[in-house]
Amino acid sequence: MGIFNELRSRMAEALGDQELPRLTPDLTINIAFYVGDQVIALDFAEGGAEISGEISAPQVTVRATADAWEQVLMTPPPATFHSFTALQLANPLFEIAGSPLDLAKARPALERVFELVVTSPEMKAERAQRDLRQIRGQYAVVDIDDVPHEIYYEEAGEGVPVLFLHTAGADSRQFMPQLADTELAKSYRLIAVDLPFHGRSMPPLTWDGAPYKLTASLYLKWCTAMLEQVVREKAIVAGGSMGAAMSLVLAAERPEHILGIVAIEPPFRSKGRRNPYQHNVNVHGSLHNSAYVRGIMSPLSPAGERRRSSWIYSQGAPGVYPGDLSFYSDEFDGAATAPRIDPSRTPVALLSGDYDYSATPADGAKLAELIPGCLHLVMGGLGHFPMCEHPNFFRSYLVKGLDFVRQAAR
Image 1 (cartoon, rainbow, N blue to C red):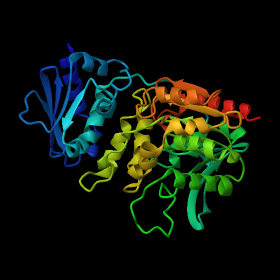
Image 2 (tube, rainbow, N blue to C red):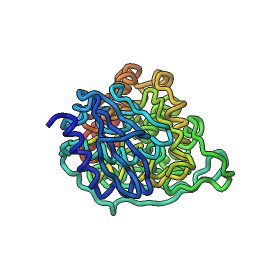
Image 3 (cartoon, rainbow, N blue to C red):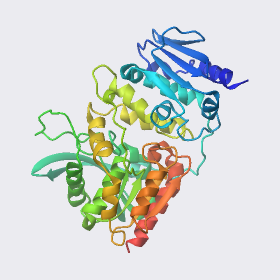
Image 4 (cartoon, helix red, strand yellow):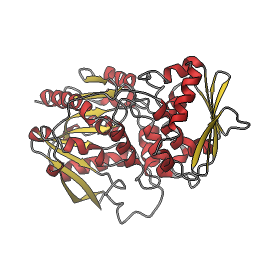
């Protein structure tokens, strides 16, 4: 059929998607996709969209050679060819043009269209036995710098404590599959917290309404308080993304509180994750931020799980996601943190998904070089949120990481 005609055909079919109208309320924008000199135009207006071959002044353009587009159409596509935001942030073969505001408004539409254009077989994995009834949710009043914080957390199982730390802008629901895992609960006391300002943990009553900004110092205080006042014993810390970065900080700064760490999608330096439209009155933050993270998941993960993972990001309080990225994207430096970890005292497991362009397998390898004797596993076919975007496929990697830490900590 040819690359241009195949891409046009897939885009035309994508416009009949029932989810697209939910993601594009009142969107009016013209988007041009160039395959060499040939163009496909998508016109969004009045709650609908149509495709054409002519456009006079597109507000957003996506341009690449036929060879580059061919990789998008592969089954499955290589990493960084699998989503719009991957093309924009991590793929030099694609030229993305448009005002930052227009790109932000169009992102939910573009991410969904690319999800439909990309064809990937779902990775199969044995389904874990899960029982949500074993999860116990409760609040604890945690004292942090003499200020009471009402912290929501969930717990399941008995045994070696595992404290799960969620990603930037999210909450503990990301670890619901792990807390419901009946086999894990036989060996581990599984604990997942909503950090202050996240999920069901409210801001402290002393908060004056100023912009939220997370720093390494503040985050370290939060986690130390959780370990001391909620967990109340040494634990394995298993954090994702921002939580992975903090698990490394804890290993370097508070080894006396932990048995070891399992860093899920650990960054080396994750610059460029901030976007001015993550919190901006001109853009629907819930639509934009949930689309922004859709682009960092694997196309091989089940669509329903990916949709749930992005749903969490549609519910974050205004300013919290970019406020978290002040730590994750601006401040954290693996080159400075990793050498301060004593792996003989604090075992370290690093789990890197190969579709993750924020915390890549190469990032994990750099960290591993600085932490002698650590375990580094590359999770083929997984993205930035493996614990919730494909919990069944992720399970074996998590078990290997936990087993490694548990055995090394004896």
